[in-house]
Amino acid sequence: MFLHISSASVLGKGEGLGNHTRPNPSTFPSPAYALAKLEEDEYLTRACTERGFRAIFLRPAVIYSSQGAGMIGTMLKLARRGITVRLYPRNARQHLAHMDLLADVARRVIEHDDLPNLSYLVVADPYTVTNRELEAMIRQTLRSRSITLPLPAQWFSTLLRCTFHSRNPKLDLKTMGEILGVVACDTVYDPSETFRLLGIDPSQYSMEKTLQPMMVGSL
Image (cartoon, rainbow, N blue to C red; front, side, top):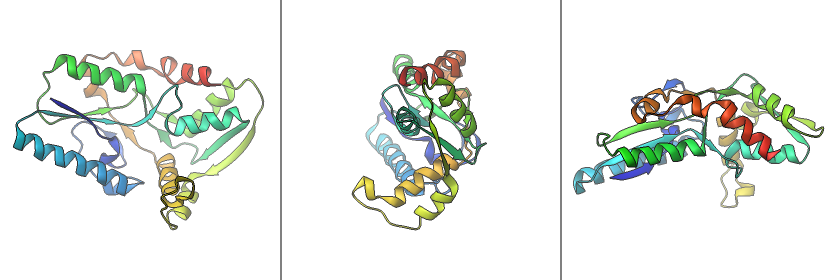
C-alpha cells in the first residue's frame, strides 16, 4: 500500500467538499499549486494500476501545529511581536487540520489496511473558524496589548497576483497573492466520512482540544 499525502486544494473552493467531490483545481485561489497536486494524484493512480499496488490518498486542509506551520503559525508569530492581524473578509471561514489529526488518520489507515484501492480521504478539523473568530481568540490569549494590522486579503490578493513569481520566497509576490487568496476564500470541507471510516471520534479534535490549547502554548 502506498499512502500519499495530497491536498484538499485539488477540490477547489466551495462548501461540503468531501471524499467523493470531483476535483476542481481551477477554482482554488492558487490554481497552479492545486493542479500540480492533482497531476501527482493522477500519476500515482496510473502507476498503481500498472504496477499492481494499492494507493490511498489523504487530502488535508490547511495544516497547523504547535511548531508553527502554515497561516496560523504566521499569525501567532506576528502576535508575539505585538501585532494582531485583522483579516478581511471578516466572516470568511477557515477550515484547518491539526497535525495530530493528520497523523492519527495516517496511522489508522495503515493499521486497518482494509480501505479500497484509490480511496480519497479529506482530512479537516470537525469545525470551521472565521477570520473574526481567529482574531478574537488571539486577543483573548495574548498576555500583553497589541496593535491591530488591518489586512484586506482579497484586495491584496488581486493586486499581487498581477505581479510576478520569483525563486526568492521573499520576492515572490505572486505566490504571496495566491496565499492571501486562500485566506480570503470561504471554503468548507466535509470530513465526516473520513471520521466514520476510521472510527475517529470528532469530539477528540474539537476546537477546545486543538486550536485553543495550541494558541495558549504559543502565546
